[in-house]
Structures are given as C-alpha cells and as structure tokens.
Image 1: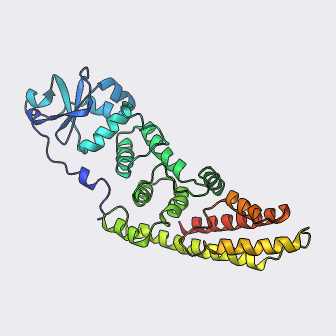
Image 2: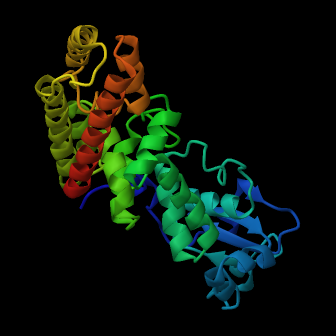
Image 3: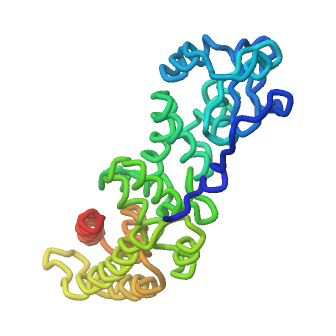
Length: 320
C-alpha cells in the first residue's frame, strides 16, 4: 500500500495512563472542561465550543468513556475523551476550530501538504464542514477549474503559474495525491498536472519512491508533459503556415517582424514542458507589439495564440 504524507503520524497505541499524559503546548485552555487525548498528548478544550463545531464530538462527549477507575477517566479535574487519531492531526484540527493559527483560514497562505491532508481527513471524520471548505478553497484558488480562470490566473501571475499559494518544494505531487484520494473536484486536476509537468522526471520518480504520489497518479503527468510539448510545436507550425493578411497596411514590415517573432518563439519550444502555453495572452501581445507588428497583425497573433491555449486546455482536460 502506498505511503501518504500522514503515514508517520498514524502509529497509535493503547490509551496511556493519565499520569503519563503530556499537555499540549499548542491547544491547552486552563478554563477548559474536557480533555481530548491523542497518542499520549492531552488537549484541554471547551466542551461547548468543540461540540458546537462538530456533531461527532458532541455525541462523543455525551457517551461515557470506558475506564478502569475514576483516576484514568479524569485528567486535571476534567473528563477525558480518547481518540485514535495522531497528536499532530488532532492539534491541527483543534487549532483550526479555535483559530489559534490565523493562517489556517487565510486561503492565500501556504499550507504543507501533510497539514492539508490531516485537516481534510479529520474535518470529514468529525464533520467540521467550515474547515473542509477552507482547505478545499485553497485548492480551488491555486488550481483554476476552467480555461477562463486559468487565463485570469496567468494574467495575475505575470505569465507563469508557479508562484504558488500551496505548492512548495515539490509538494505539488502530494497535492495531486490528496486531490485524487479525497475526491476533490476533478476539474482542478488539469491545472495541477500542468504545474507538476514542469518538474524534472527525476523529481517525479523521487516523489513516487517517498510516497508523495503513486505511479498511477504520475502517469497522466507524463502524458500531459508530452501533450504540452506537442502543442507548442503545433503553435509554431501554425505561425509558419499562416501568411500575413492581404489587408495588412505594412506588409513588408510585418513580414519581417513576423519572421523575427517566430525566431524568438522557437527559442522556447522544447526547452521544457508548457513553456509557450503558460506565458499568457499579454505575453504574446507584448511580444508581437515589441516586434513592430501592426495592430491588425498583433490581433491576429493573439487570436491564434488564444485558440492554441484553448485547444491545449481541452486536451489536458481529456487526459485527466
């Protein structure tokens, strides 16, 4: 079975003795009235606060916990509820419930893959929908679900979608695994795989070996990588095959400028996947204008490029 980013978090033994518990340094309220214990770590919280945000915890609090004696059932004067989740998972969930980490609900901030997976997992298990929505929103912002949103993101990022809100140090592979294993909107996958395709093949294999994703999850990335490279060659060929329009008022100048533009574009083809595709309409318009093409020819180049991007996006969707 494939390892996950949470594999090291989930080694759970039997309930420890109360006198062996360690207080959490992250989630401990002196005025709390219930203690949640995970892997020997005690989290003192407010029964009403947690129960209000989670129907599952509300039900757990109402069920007496089996215990050998009163001593093992109470800790620091509070009733104890044992859970089978890891201490890290529970800390992240409770911190999100209490807004202890202000960045948890800041959908524009970075979040490690293991934290995102832990929150999705426990928010589903304990029915905390607002935390689920917060984490999923990060994915939706990072990975546009439609072509128009993808174009808008390219424009906002200045032409390259790899200034990520989520992705850091190869976490993209873990995020693709999370998206697929947790059943997130599959329409987010094309943009995610587009970002992953820019990594070297060696990084993809390393991610398989260390359990960030599986071979079956890597396979669409390789197909997309090939598709992006093929699409860039198709765009270059399209420019080569299309003549300057007869209505052009500066035909000799635009013909020479078009040749210069083609030479410039050809430098990018084949360097690595998705180089031309990801540049965006503004890039094409700026390059066309800077090569002294007339307004009509700039518009034609932009039209060709937009059609190229739209067709390529449809092919990415088909692969995913």
